[in-house]
Image 1 (cartoon, rainbow over the protein chains, first blue to last red):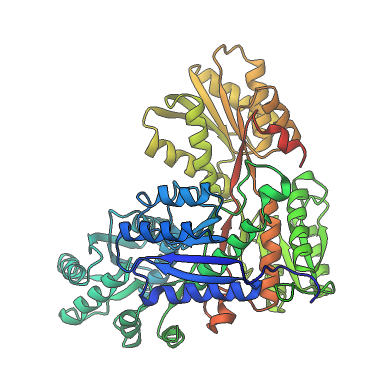
Image 2: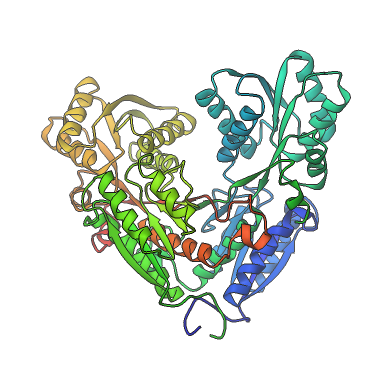
Length: 303
Length: 303
């Protein structure tokens, strides 16, 4: 190849997460590395060890001090981390957000799941599973923005496309397995004829699965959950959970690196058109979800 | 450069539009060409001459017959063109949609304006212009999906963020300058204290501008319009229209070509992870809008 898009290995792009050791980030990092290999540049992985915004701010400060060629960060807290993100951007370091955004910041783009669309897909899947009629429930974190969006996409789709389905109740599972189990048991007690439950995060999905396993409900209750951690996949495999929505983490990492490379090399709309006020990159990228069921669950253990 | 991302000039990617001669597509094509230059591949521009779905189907059939390496198409009609898009996808030709989508089709991605988000930005701009309180109106195409989304984003933002603003009326401008002028005059007659109007497409914006110019209203009525054709820019320049939302057409073209290249070369999530059920690319990319006012209008004439 004589021409093409590429940098050199001295160029370094850094991915910054929180709870840096969990499996969830592995596929995002693989996407980041795959893009770096394609473009012939280097990457580094950093992150707060815990779920602690102050620790993430410290890590980000350290990364900024070393003047990398770009930073992709998943924001633990959209407000508290914004000043540090802006510090990076103001010092000329390209910054994009992935997975968990910070809408008020100066980062150039957000690459992650469109939670509203994920809710739409969850509604379509659950509707199909229950034969497009009957009562359903939702277990979520109704006070957290990304979960509100999932609920909104879900409910608006049910209303618009499935008039014979009724959302009988929404419970707060607090992102906790035991609280969610209790919430699911209450839902089943209040509505013994419930045919399906949409759960907007993984701990709640497992808790809901345990509720069904421990209850005396005889009719099948279909669960559609979120994310693809091992416990969820095990419950897909044994049929307790019917489907889960796996996020497009490889695409988050891959396109974050591409975007940082494009910012670094001035291959953006604002540069190419010479219009400073134009967004340099697409401001928002929906990396989509995959519906994981018994049929394709095997593929997801490998990740 | 020894390594990097690139193809060869024998590789051909085709952009397909409708009303192929209008200025609107020029910047999208420039983005498509810029990406092709970066990646060392070739492009071709084709399109229906008129606003005619049958002509676009014929053009697309001709393009498919020549087996290009990828097709980026802006769908004139999301339903009628779907079978032909699927024919391309089924024959193994990478296809992405840009600007105007076809949600039911087998195209791998849609790269274009998120109309809901554009409505959010329109609401914030109009709210600022009128000092965050008072009556406003909307002139739109309330029966067309992309315009419904713009209205929804606009109205939900007003409700959530600007409690002192009241949306007094929504009129159908039918995408026509004269009908929109008449609609604006009616709006002003019914609500003489109106302080701002959001118009969701360009002909309506110019019609609304003409309504204000011809009316005897003394107080300033702020107009926020859509798109950046010459007539709209002229009205921005002379102050008749306060702001307009220019779409990110360069990014539509640039990232469409990148996506087609990635599909062609199997540089996608489904290939790299070997999971057939995973979306290969981000299913939806919001290319954003630029708020054009007197301050930056000069930059947009150049396009």
